[in-house]
Length: 216
Image (cartoon, rainbow, N blue to C red; front, side, top):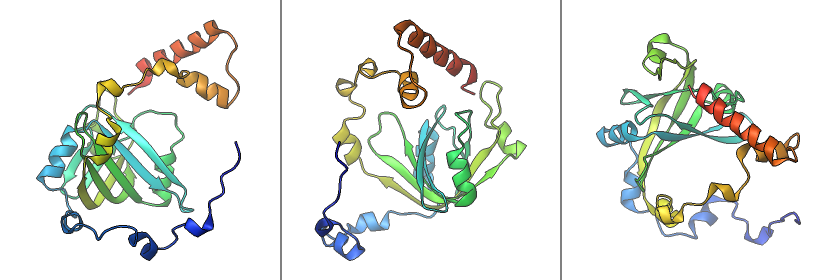
């Protein structure tokens, strides 16, 4: 595939040029940003089993990481503070290392079946305070640490993206078997996947077994 080269005549490089393409922001949209978690935001968070965390390192390299647990897994410590448990993963620690370098974070809370979402921006730090972690125990397993977010901005995001994508429409669900398994994709991208279906099936089964043993 030939490398894409943008036409410089059509690159938008400043805010004035950007805003000239759109109508003025709706006054309600401009006013909806809060600096604390009101009751509606708190209710949304307690219903959410899934949040995406956006971070950046000092060189502005961006990362977005999904986090999921039973609904309400993100603790509301007060109207300006959230605590997100860090569960076992692949131990790359991308988000955590980024937070150490640059505490600015963006959160996107999603509730299954809801088309609207909740966006929260703030500054984060890491803690292994036992008093906080013990309350996040699942199946007797306590997380090693939590991400604490001091909230600076909160607002609801409209339903257009989810409705355009039909994300919750079962008729739009795709068959996962139409793509290779996660194990095969990663092996293809790294050391190479085995040639036999039986060996690949064994590796896939081992991954499923690992999920069952290490989820928490």
